[in-house]
Length: 501
Figure 1 (cartoon, rainbow, N blue to C red):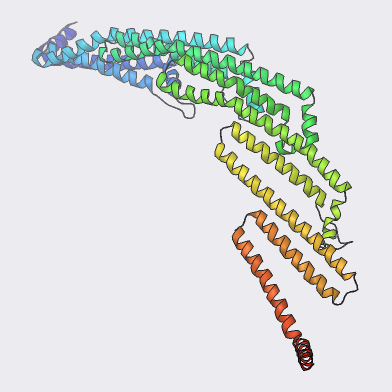
Figure 2: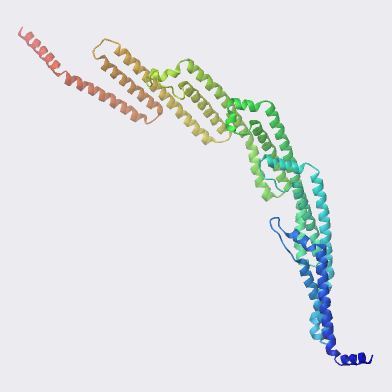
């Protein structure tokens, strides 16, 4: 006992130096223990991993060492408190006062931080529960299967299920709703006011957004349902077989006409639905231009539909008339027209397209051009309609010119054959002359029908005829010079004999 008393007396002599060091050592140890306890507690609860997963994106991992950070903060707070205690013990209040105020503020703010943490934990619990309920409720419906089926039919990659998307939206919405309360608990009025204003606007806009989403979703499902009904009904009615029979299926490729009609009906339904959804949003600056555009498109649909009906009906009528004209021309022997005109020889290899088939194609093209002019007029494309009408008139003039020239070929051949069949002298030469003259006349008349510089064609034709006349005159004059001289001498001798009498 005496030994311990002596040791205590020795320590008491130096307690002014030993106790501050001892307090500092004990505080340092307790600070380490506090930091270790906070780190272990957070790691046991898995809060750091949960927050990392909460803040991470889908395509990358985010690692937050929250436990170590919180432990370090707890360690320094404990060490700061220890330092303040040591300074007070050694009666250095002037130095300890700022640190004491700092510790007081930190310790005074801890309830606020704890309150904010409790609020966010409550938000996390509520968000998890609501997300689970939303995902479970939507999973029991056919929403995921329906949308994934539509993506597969459209040959698009399947994305995150809609039920999970809606669940995540509800999850984050809960956090946003709890955020003002957490900021209020932290006494962050500077951040709280703009957040409250933002939330007031969001909550005021949320009913419009939900109404627009509901309108569009309902309209989309109705449009898809009607699309399938129309596609199945038209397919059962045999429109696909009819399109294959008349040749429309070749233009559609892999698509069926019944499916195309279903898509058209879907578009006709979804456009007014989109207009209603945009109007439900109530954002005039954004929705008015889009609504006006969709309204203009909707107003143009009757004209587009009418133009399509005109083209389709004209196509069917053109096919019927083209086949009728082809058969009539074939029966009339029109396929031998080239032989009759002298362009081709009898017994030559047949062309890929018979003249009768070409005539049917011309009728088909003419009918479709007339239909295109009417369709362009219905759509308001007056310039295009006028241009097509001018091209159609030019095509008619060209066909008339070709017909005149073909008639000239036929008449020239007939005239030449008739002249060659006579017994007059130089019948072959006269036949060639007649044939050339008829061809020149027919060519000039045909070119005039083309409308290609009528004055030049008329002048050229007159010059050609004049040149032929001069040529014949010169040929006759030079070739019959001796005969003409003999005739003149005969006339002179006769005149002289009359005078002598």
